[in-house]
Length: 356
Ligand code: DAH
Image (cartoon, rainbow, N blue to C red):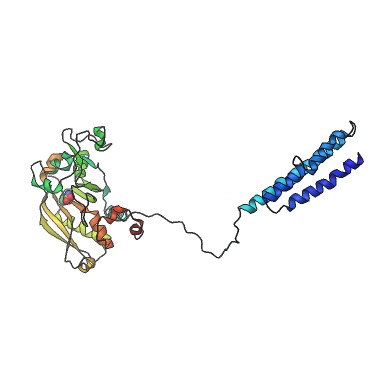
């Protein structure tokens, strides 16, 4: 019996020492087998327990169990060490290497330009308004003094929806959730300009009005370097008493100087729009335009709100006056960044987008 008990301690010590010395996980598992596996040395010792007398067994059993717990603890601790070692990089770490930079996303150039335009108008008291892209023919044309037989409609051909409820949406509210249901009798189409929002805003609120409307518009155009079937506009509408063309010109000039620098010059050229009288096209020039070999670039349409439009929305044209304009946002962005093909904006090629 004494001989048996004496064996426990040195065997345990050796087992623990060998486990601690295991160089890797495979060696550790092998050592474990050699001690506590079915044919292990420690297992053999435990088997001898059966040969002891009834009196000897309890003391020997207690000792041997305590030794087994210690061996197992040594195994678990060495396994933890070796697992950590295996997970660490094989090569030494070079702390002088430059860190990995996280790539930051940024706003699309069209969004940046839109934000800048909105910021400039906010400075002089304009609020942003919004309207549906799936629009009713009434808001897009009729209410803007452009009846069905009006030649001005030809230049703004667009995509019509197959039925009033549309192939696009199953409910008339699809014409713009939250925007009401349109006039109730005119077909739906994809809006050709943001001017439709002038009508929607004036219908809902009494004058004075001072809004801008950035948004996406659609035309039945083929894509080329300067055209795309979808593009973006920003509409402006100002209605109050005694509003003049001078206010319009001053406002447009202020915004373009904010956007493009103080060397900007603006020119108003007589034009025709059915919802303004008189109407103008706005030409723009600065050093950049000159560099392109041009004297002026056409940049927007505008004019004094036509009395018929006021009548249509229930404003008294004898009391209220106002002006409106519409810019193409792509045009301004192309000018600002020197981009020569509008399609680059929509391809979402990061090599292009990263530059802005
Ligand atoms: N809606 C016109 C277009 O898309 C631009 C425009 C011209 C807007 C005159 C206006 C305006 O508000 O008064 O070409």
